[in-house]
Image 1 (cartoon, rainbow, N blue to C red):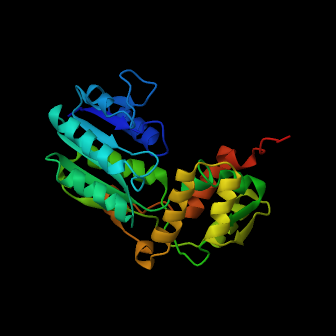
Image 2 (image 1 turned 45 degrees about the horizontal axis):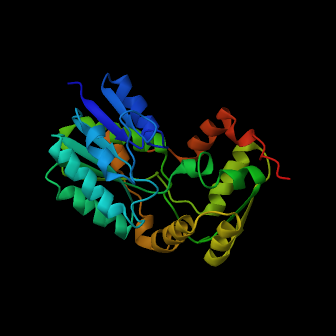
Amino acid sequence: MKHNILVIGGTGKTGRRVVEGLKQQGHHVRVASRNNTPAFDWDDHSTYAQALKGMDRAYIVYYPDLAVPGAREAIGAVTEAALKEGLEKVVLLSGKGETEAEACEEIVANSGLNYTLVRASWFNQNFSEGAFLDTVLAGHVALPMPEAEIPFVDTDDIAEVVTQVLVDDSYNGKTITVTGPRKMTFKEVVETIAEGVGREIHYQPISLEEFKAGMKAAGLPDSYVWLFGYLFKEVLGNPENQDISHDVERVLGRKATDFKSYVEKTVKSGVWNQSLPQTI
């Protein structure tokens, strides 16, 4: 059966991959964003219903993170709108080990909709598409929590899992936890990337306060500084959140992508060969 599926966050790391996967399966996909018609804006609850109209299912990615203030209200409003518009099911992308995200999960679970929750560990692609790309390009990655062992997960795996559970009702009411197949420290991550690109990249452990001060000095908004502080301290600081899950293998019938495989693929893309923009 082919479905009409709304992808909220359809231009993001997982969303655009989900869009591609669903289209390959022949589903009709609507990308929800401020610039599309109908427009969807997380900050404007009145846009939700029109974007959901005519859709059967939806993939929900809240930006920037379910932990930030306002997320619960937005998730409550979007699920209420989805129920009113007659959607069959929603899939929520959540964060592994985030207490605030779990509060949003409860809202979805109690919404009256069929649902699947996908809890993800930290993304491999943070080093090639996200917050840490510039530090890799600069050859100097300074991050806190050097002792944390993280089962980094590939966004291709997340997207493939999401695409599967969106259309497979046997996953209704279930929570799927997606991680990579092994735990790695930031030092091990940086060494693996350096080996892959064939040049020196140095990892420097710093304190969380130093990291936050650097973000402020770079002109990042206070909300982002708070969010990264929360993610490092509350999520990476809890050993229970560093457990490996085998749900990727259970859902997809194959092993999760190893970080080294991600590096080999990313090296071929050339993203780590670009130069940082010059500042005057």
